Length: 81
Image 1 (cartoon, helix red, strand yellow):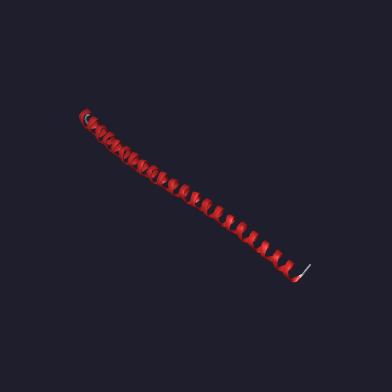
Image 2: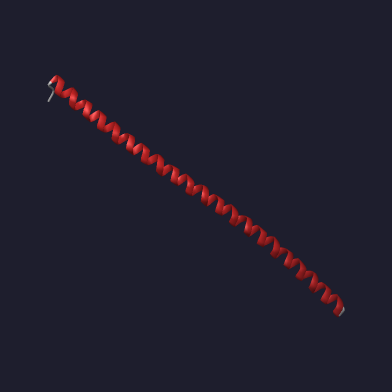
């Protein structure tokens, strides 16, 4: 094997390595982009769940207050103690 063949072989190997690095970089970039998208979706779902939880809590509080008041009126009207 001559020196020129060795140098050509090394250049070819380096070109393949560079191409693999470019492909890996593209894969990592895409993966990070997908991760960011997933993180944003998860955060949005958590915010919506928190809002829904708050609304349910308020509905329960109002419903409990209405039921408690109605029960007190019912007891007073029919003399139940």
